Image 1 (tube, rainbow over the protein chains, first blue to last red):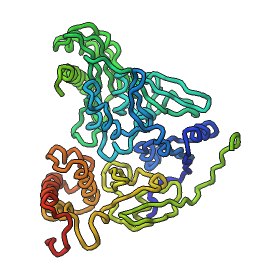
Image 2: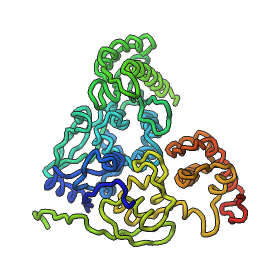
Image 3: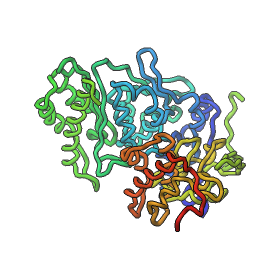
Image 4: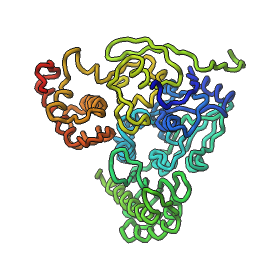
Length: 297
Length: 179
């Protein structure tokens, strides 16, 4: 049958960012933003969302697809695909090896060619790998509307599952984070029954800066710490900061993490198992980062 | 015009230009049609299979401007002006590509539903990595689901294809193919 199962909707193809913002300001509430389409079109295919007017952002890629260093910031355009991030200088820099992990853990090769950085945040789903990694880098998100722009810290972007701190007339145009010091690195880990196409029972990312053996700074993010969207484990970070990095310290941090985190039980994994996995992956991430700072991979 | 409300027509017919397997086509599509609908039902490239329709199985993958994409998650209008390669375009008329020959030789194909996607993904892999290791093959073919479970044969087949290509045998006559 022709067009089996896909619903009818209109598509607006903007000629420039300005044009897209104009349509958003006029028809904001009925517009669905379509970046890569690896989430929206799946939801439409299964009739979970009803699309009315779709604003196809793909033509804006000539303006909004880049990874660059500028004024001490790393800036990623909202429509940069995961594949383009992998092929940028980020994965060649020891400090950002987390993006290497991200690429190989992210969906499948064909999804990495479509899925975009902005879309990953805009989806506001717990298992948004890139958002989890960007949380550990203290990223900020630029929301642009026809009347101006504002920067929002990534941890303030999520309100609920699939609900974003975004006015209907705004769109994500850029993500930036400060360049991290030399003696730091990042890592991302995911655990599932299989490696390919894995959602992950849990996803963990971490950023750590070491001074000798002392943890100068650390940020740890999980796919969920209690709320149904990616979040950071602030108390565990606070506990670890300033301490010497050793297995004993990490084991002590387990107790803090356990108190701070609430997990859900579902058909994929029970909550106790998820908490246990979170502890183990946190440990592995921190040890991996240590070896990365010391020159390993 | 500045200040005027943007008027959007309901489901207009849109003419798009596609280059599929080296031939140019102009097709009229609706805004909600996907690339897979156009390739299968309007242009007749039936090697593009709709397995799940949600980017999970990899049966519908095509090369769009050299990038591997699932055609069920690409709106047809987004493919406007791009170059698309499907399984039919891998080898000239009456010939088989080394990858296809390798999959036949190693019996890598069982029921055959997934394998147009697998072969296109293999082509994408060999475009990027000329001599892939087992790990590379697993990484690049991880999204191609096969209900018959031929995954181990995929690895053998890709290695054989690499051997053929290294020997300079890229296209095979149909007569050279057994069965």
